[in-house]
Length: 319
Picture 1: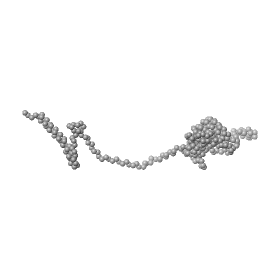
Picture 2 (picture 1 turned 90 degrees about the vertical axis):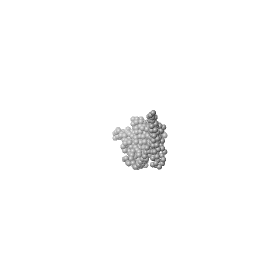
Picture 3 (picture 1 turned 120 degrees about the horizontal axis):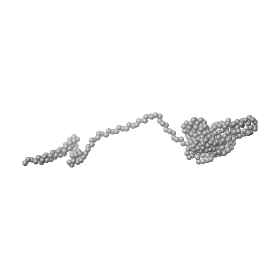
Picture 4 (picture 1 turned 135 degrees about the horizontal axis):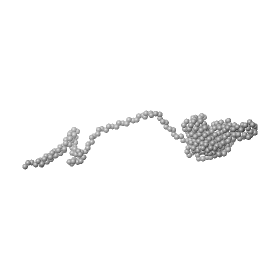
């Protein structure tokens, strides 16, 4: 009976599988020996593995070998920044805010026109440019400009604008009004009401009363007597008297306490627009807006004026 070809084929297949398996075991050993021979050190044989992720033939999956990276390129050192190139003219740092101190200083600035100022003890005026901190007692010449003035009143600050006059700035808790022009030397100085706050006082200066004659001062009060003196005196009395202005100050403010002082009257205000004008016949106060309390410095009388009203504190017969 002839050989069983089926069994023979199975035997050959088994032999072939064994040979392949043996070769698979020998290849890593040969490679390791070659590598170890080149370096002079023995390299342990690597275990057979499966190239796929799923295990097969009892072999674990081969670990993925990452190729070694080359030496890290060092980061270039940061170049130190050199001096900054100029970009044009440097903007000057603004000066610190000016703050008035009650009873000591005020802040003055020219709103329009030309303003001059003179500090206490100085002999000459200087032009006011920008805003400036001035001591109380300074003299302002605002005959050709408008002055913005900020002062402290004890609880905050107050701001006003003033023009058309020369005046001295002072501050007091209790305002001592000066004697009226022409009052006797022994007349007492009248004081205003005292309070917790500070009052900013602007006293008119400049002008000349030298050209004021008796007729200007009396305002024609003795016209009857002059009429009895003769036709010439009567004709002079019949002519209208001109109201000769010596100096005046226009004032406007929106809060706080201010007082303007003329030759024969003082006006104290809170939030108003008013005129203080010295004439040969006396001090004229006109209220354009708000309320003003006028004190007659000669008689001591006080008058309250509202918008659209005026008061004339008449000068005495002799100056």
